[in-house]
Amino acid sequence: MARIRTIKPEFPQSESMGRVSRDARLLFIQVWTICDDAGRCRGASSLLRGLLYPYDDLACSEIDKWLAELDRVGSIVLYEIDGWRYLQVQNWARHQRIDKPSGPKLPEFVEGSRVLPEASRGLPVGSGPGPGPGPRPGPGRGKEGNGEGNPKNRHSRGTDEAVVFEHYKTVWQKPKAKLDPKSKRRAMIRKALKTFTVAEICECISGYRNSPHHCGQNSQHTVYDNLSLFLRDDEHIEAGLRFAKGAPNGKPSPAPMTDADREKLAKFVESRRDSAHDADEIIRATPEQWRKEGWEQFIKSTYANHSQTLQ
Image (tube, rainbow, N blue to C red; front, side, top):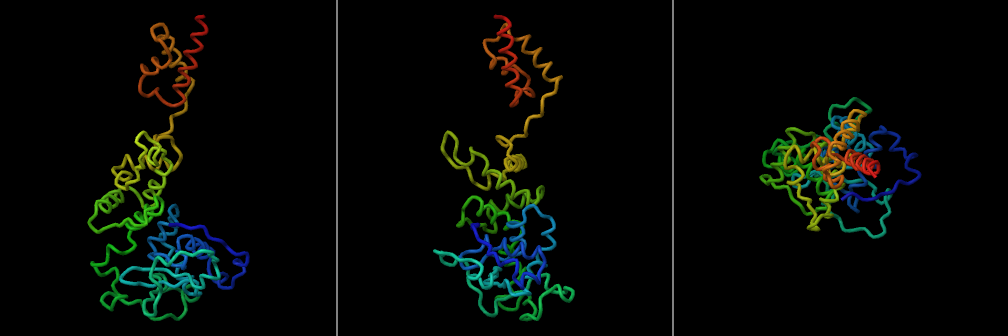
């Protein structure tokens, strides 16, 4: 779950931060918001990209480079435990003062578990890390080497599916939710990724937080927060994207009325006013494309004007 963190006034004067790019500094600050109170978070670059840069295409190709810069100056350390990658912010207590810290949520860094960011290999001199602990272990080289080349551990990597699911857990506050290899959730995420990008799916999931109906303001007083509901089909995903943009009821905003529309509606109201008991009856009789927010109000005001004229 994301947390509120603070930035000290002396942060801009930090010599280590002066040796990394502005993008790396931003990444370093953003990482704090997803760290537990011990300064640790999941460290897969694709997962960090989805959580911290949902709208930035540039991060897809650059985030490993930024991680390498931070690793080079000793601001972070990346490590693997049982095939899972983690990130530890070094000197965490200098960056954050936490009055009542909760217990660690993730395993701590131990010697021999360190890995290097992908971009740290083959970087030009001056842009990558200095001498490190040696090359990253490859598949089959012990516990730390259970890497992406090992099919057994592919599902536990920071894949796009995991990025989406971690975002869902964070936004809807479901820390205990699990994404099993053959679960229905994973299948639906995989299906959605065939049509939509990771950023769009994450935006959809966040968008449903703007829906009063899904958040419990309905006749059943029930919160509808199942990921399978959000990603049921393309229509539901597009509705979530519209919620994210503030569209009422997850529906496209009505097209603005033109003068021609107003003239047609006024004639329609005039033709129906003698037989209709009220404006709502006229609204129900109007063609589907006219029953929109704003248009209904025009019909009511036109009906009222006709009624006053008759009196």
